[in-house]
Image 1 (cartoon, rainbow, N blue to C red):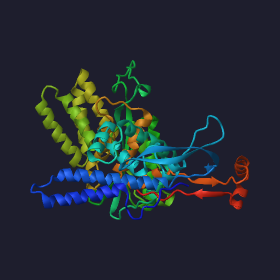
Image 2: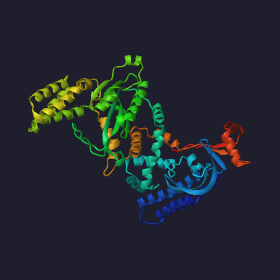
Image 3: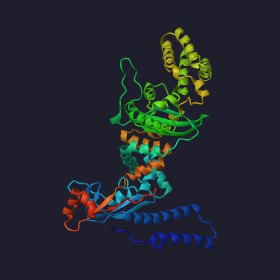
Image 4: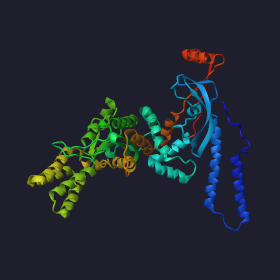
Length: 509
């Protein structure tokens, strides 16, 4: 195993240049009357520090290399083929090291690099720290903007194309282990003692999709076309904990690319709810969404994972239609009733909205008012009023807002509406964008973890998946037959000592 020589006396060229720079800077203050430019000093000092950091990282990275005749990784034996230099991107910039490559039997087989496997190099380019920084930034900015930001900060300077590929390198690893890793994240979390309410919300937002994923909207004989062509609904879900005063304490956010019946998103919300209620079965469950049937199809049949005894002791869940959506429908109804008098329409809307929110049985009063105007209307006005009247009749059991407020329960789904905006709209709906299923999910996963305050533990899980255990196969006599023998008799291999392991070293995050 080749390792760079130790440098205990810190006499490396980079360290010498740093010392010389500092001495020169100090000398300027004693010999010059003009004040030195602080910005120039900061920039040059940072550059010297980055050179020294790259030198130390290259030295450390070289220690992960393996120089043997044969190695085994995940049950496959690989034989040494060649030594070559490779440049990797660290958080301080590019570092170049010599590394050994190995290949299994077979002409079309792919070589492996034990150095990369042991160190956890991501995408064949990024060191773990560099990948973490790149993933975090590109979750918020476009690759081009992210590259410009790194260029301004100094240190590593990844290309826009490298940053674009990075989430796509990470996402398959997360998706392959998603359920287990999400469960692992939940295990480390607790429920605040002051929490009294668990609110679950589900919604969606239309996002532009690439040609392969586009669904053209066509009119059916009895139905108008809805939604712009090339757009599909991205699902968003939230779980929030509230205290007795209605203050939001914690929110977990999820975003998933278009999927039939939002299957994965619903499963995620259900698993989160069950994990929280396993710790606090006494929490009041509030299901909060707009009036879309698809959302309530899931929320009405939500499996909370409570035992029969717990269900008997706990208060039954309450279902609430988002008050803001209800108010929007009420405004449409008022505009339909008084189409030629916007001032009166606005005044009546304000009055009815106040009744709906603050008057006991307010929804009944709203329905009674709409029913009265529906009976007197004709033509398109009657049709429009009737549509809103049907909405309030269907949602009546979920619109007892005065009672909800008296209990301190949330009545507005602003949390999930904000999730639709911050998870999806702000990143996926910028000018000229169109997304594939995998690329969009890669970004949504990163943003969901960051916005749910799970980034640190999630990155530990994700980055560790890129590190592999490398075992050295001893080949003292006939190398080929010895390697074949150890593969055929793994129990003899462990007993005879013909294999020794190069374990992955602890990852500094």
